[in-house]
Image 1 (cartoon, rainbow, N blue to C red):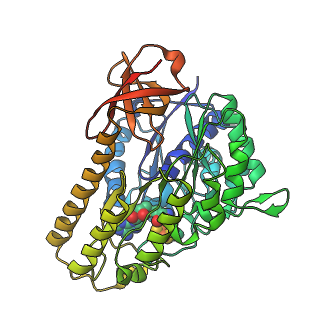
Image 2: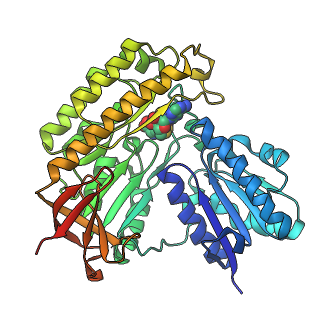
Length: 441
Ligand code: SAH
Ligand code: F3S
């Protein structure tokens, strides 16, 4: 009988992608099936995130809950992967002896062998090394029934922004080859995928080879646009410093590339940007936004923001608000700064009162929600080209689709043949978190 696997994923889209790969691997190599209920599982996997302090605390709380299941069912195994695993390694087992396996983001392909070894020896296994690209060479062909799929193109990050733990947990940048990526894209297109979402911590520094020569993200996008049945291309995350001219130009060449880009700015204050080691100024960021708008006038931008970076003054914060009002970002993410181990920012004097940080976050988030809602309201009464993703989870009489800028649209229909199709939908109402639409014939 097949063994049962339960995976819980914290954090970013890269972790979601990695979790899918873990499921594929464990199914192919160890005959596991994925289950929805953790109490049924033989193996519990937690794919962790360490980007902020709270994310890390969540790991030990989750292990505590799983330990209670293990107390009743001692044969169950617990494996911890992802960025907290990479950062803490063996310490996880020291602090939580119920854990059997620890693996990192670059060693997830070793989970089947770590599992086997632990099972045979009954001694805990840890592998958090960074073997270059080995991970992708060991992957089975992707399998999905979805309309949209993530494809990782570059792993790790070399930027060392002063606040960020990613270069420490995911290692340095390594790009996959263009051929390898296009094979994955074609395999996904053959299974009905219509939207490809390229992933990496810093996708615009992609340097994968094509026919033996160093290539670029712009070239990869052009080639992906030619793959049959791929109708939409997205990418995250791009760093403003490396958004080169060829990437801007590609917006004029590849209609499949969506008119929406996530371009994290973090702050609008040059002083703070410098302390963050982001390598651009607010003016440079604005110039980039304008250059992209020249090529694609309907372009929408979203961003990540950090408030309360050490030493951030009211004036610095005002400059961030000014930038937000200038760019008019669509749905974005914002966080209170959280000191991370081994990062230079963690050594900086941080004297801002927590209440002030919370107040700034509140002001910023209110403005961002307002701007995102303005875009939604402006869409009411228009027809939008949408990709139908599936049946709405809340109402089986409705289908759920996504607009070009990735807003969710629900509309009444039971015609499941529309799923995975690009369809014109008339937007009839805007709610804070989604749109309501009606099918256009
Ligand atoms: N590669 C991306 C960022 C990945 S991390 C980039 O180019 O910027 C995702 C987001 O988490 C970051 O954009 C940042 O806004 C936030 N973040 C990272 N480290 C943080 C920290 N120490 N405290 C608070 N937020 C942080
Ligand atoms: Fe982190 Fe900066 Fe890289 S935010 S992921 S170090 S681009």
